Length: 306
Image 1 (spheres, helix red, strand yellow):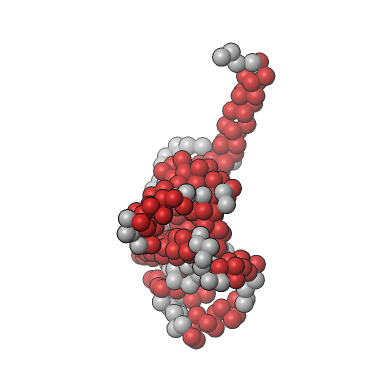
Image 2 (cartoon, rainbow, N blue to C red):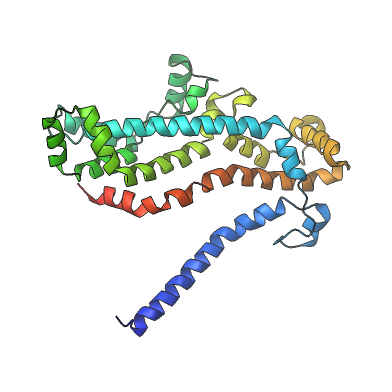
């Protein structure tokens, strides 16, 4: 089939636009990573660093030479893995139950879930509930146990489940399968595109969550990577070093690693901040290529069906 001139022009414009969009998206992140490998002289001599002339890994030596990043990785992996699996377990069970027309109070339950998307008790009641009643303050459970059911994911997966022919479930019931067997052996395998996509969304949300630890975790060794990143990025190195423990620790480790005096600390601080952002962002970004094929097929179909 011969391609028309209009189609060729559209393809060229489309590919050009997507390439430009990819460049705009990736260029700042590339500059950030490259800036984490430069020293003082090179950083000040260029507007931005496309490629370091003399790569300097001092920032990464600093990060992985302390317990900050290692402890942050442990906590983030813990909360991301358990939190994502826990969330998807609740979403799958709730979505499957809501496909039954015979479920008592189905409409009321459905509206109850939707109500929580728009209305909440507020931060202070939530804080009191977590600390005074659930006793989860400074407990790693607080990073993933509360708020396990993602209502948006529930709505998408429920619609996807509704699109699966009821005859499959009826045939399995006749063969003696119970509801858990039907869900595990039939419904979930057929729903993997939606489940994989929603699982990635849940993992990204958990990985980037800093507010839970900010409000409820006091032990610095239990802080996730997002809070370590926040701590590194926002602290003021221009403040009086005598009243800034973070600055003092940074200077001490800098002297131990590479030597130098106080005026070198600021540029080293910039490299450390950039390195921290890169270290925090890269792991979760590496998951996207493996889940990309599920995005349109999973979320779009789940949103339309039903």
